[in-house]
Amino acid sequence: MFCPKCGQQSSDEVRFCPRCGLQLAGLPAYVAGNEYAPARPEPARVAELTAKRRGTRRGAKLMFFSVVLFPVFFGLCFLVNGPVPLFVPFTVFLTGLVMLVYARLFGDELIPVSHRGARDRDLSAGAERQALGAAQFTPAPLFNQPRANTAEIYQPPSVTENTTKLLDKDS
Image (cartoon, rainbow, N blue to C red; front, side):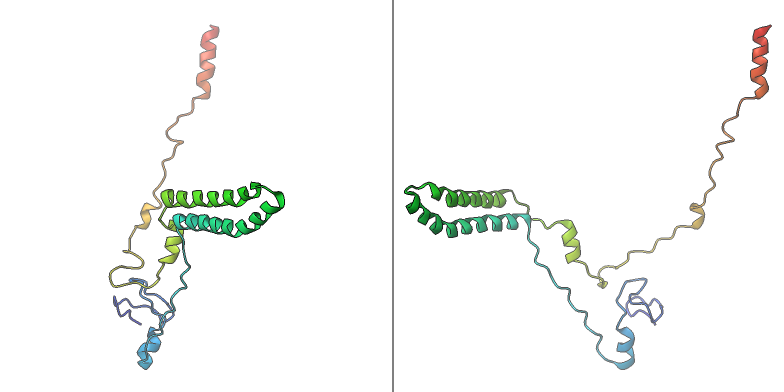
């Protein structure tokens, strides 16, 4: 089988062209029966939130939670005969407001690289780019260059030289 994009010959068992990366999985059935190539299912997109949006949502949830708590603690004010229980929903509301403002001012709007790579992954090669990149040739002799023999660099001292020096000191 030949790749319709680049003309590279390959076996019928391969799923992608080894040269350009074109998906060849449904090509033999298409050529044999003149039927449409099966459409590749779209990967399910997972909703990804930036740090700014996550922080904003947390702050808004806390503010909503404080609004829900307000009637409960307002009822407790009548049992205690004072406004002290209202400090709880008020504190939760202010915490949510601070989180919301902080996220809006200082939150990152970038999706982390690890998530972005998974989202944009596409195995089919488009006409404008190659899937595998250009082929590189590295000759094998460059991998097996002979190493320098370090034993030839250092000459061990002679055994008789040390003894001769000792005899010279004695005389």
